[in-house]
Length: 556
Ligand SMILES: Cc1cc2nc3c(=O)[nH]c(=O)nc-3n(C[C@H](O)[C@H](O)[C@H](O)COP(=O)(O)OP(=O)(O)OC[C@H]3O[C@@H](n4cnc5c(N)ncnc54)[C@H](O)[C@@H]3O)c2cc1C
Ligand code: SF4
Image (cartoon, rainbow, N blue to C red; front, side, top):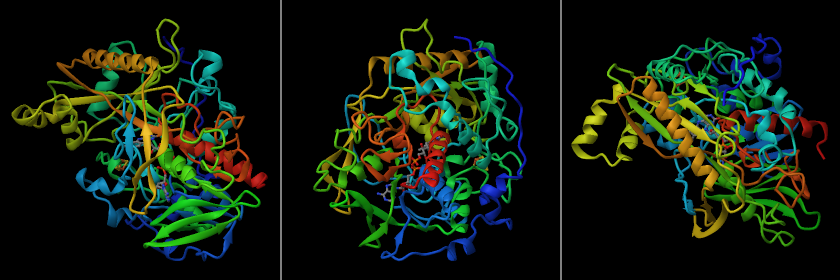
């Protein structure tokens, strides 16, 4: 289905105003190093006996934004993260193999008819969360994503609408900042920075799409196109998924944590939260229990926000049983862990006689949302987006071995690496109650039951993935590919503690408060009721910025 292409308003922004509300980009050093050690050394520190206004579990996309926003309202805040407080200079290497420390590799179990492998392709650890190794594509959801049940008869309607998030999308796009061409799909809009130049992979994508009659745009990416505060311009070396050593890619470590520290937040790394503490008498959260250096400790707080990613957040709620809530917090209606979603993310590579050299740029370059919405002419509901992905050599070898190539044929494909361009799809797989996290019999090194994640596709999901694959193959063939190779995979977990108006239908209310427990919040991707065909990080940050505004107005 063709989408009409209106010309959006072109509203580039100035830094005035932005710096006044989030100074992070000016708080990273401008002396060639990446970390403001003084800010970290001098950050405010609280004792476990201190009762802070808010303790946040997880310093990722959601947790960092919440901390930065509420610190500016004078809240006392401790953020606990199970992983390290990264220093890009000391900790990261521009090398695929050396990046494995970025991933959450604690044990988890998977099951269901279509199990989702967990590891490097889903959650991160440490301050900055999964955005440390995300690619940097940051599209918005479409207005239709908020009412898929009413409009398309699938999924569920959100209790909030696109209009509730629009202003927060704009604010976060400025803070990351986002570079891209004027966007015609969904709610047409512009981006703060102009689009980046493209590499061979981007050129193939746009050439093939144009020849196949598919409209494309360059971006949107959270990668600075020009100096931004003290952050330098992207240098196009393509190691975005290894943790950008340059500070050009926007991650919470540099977009929200510096400003949070400057406003009195304590970020306590290597602190694994094992349960939310609740007063049985009042049924209010009173803080959290966590493990630091092998010692079990407690942080007291007037409010608790859980932001540990879609697997660990439901797991923590399930682990936090009390006399009143023997099945876990927020779980009186057996909703915690349910409706966990993952996008179908097949990738198709095409071979070209000319060299493509896909690695000479950030993987996210160009995309299309032409197939995002329900097309009445198709047998399935909802849709998919297409984007460039540019696997580095080890990921490329995984792509090749997934086809069964081994030995000499594998070596030949690896030698041929520079001739391949790769395109990826994100398919909107539907929320289903039985796709869920539960607690397994197996225990982790802290003695806690690990998460079990069951996942099965429905017919609509399977049809969407097949359709996306055929469009990618059409696009690459139209660009002149002489050979194609597709792998099936998943990306981007969200849901598991979804937002709902009624406690019977979800875990948190429209203000992210756990139903029936107003001082316990879920402020990460777990709260999404549906996922669209857009990468989720921008939406998570925008939702949490909205939640922070609501809290600042009515702490409760
Ligand atoms: C390879 C890859 C590429 C991606 N590319 C994109 C992209 O291009 N665009 C996009 O929008 N999204 C992308 N994503 C997804 C995106 O990064 C995530 O959706 C997003 O970061 C999730 O935010 P969150 O707040 O839910 O969790 P996270 O950002 O993962 O933060 C969770 C934090 O909680 C901490 N934590 C967990 N449990 C505990 C505990 N018990 N105690 C203390 N701390 C805990 C973790 O250490 C982590 O730091 C990508 C992901 C991957 C893996
Ligand atoms: S390509 Fe740009 S954004 Fe990606 S790692 Fe390199 S400098 Fe950072």
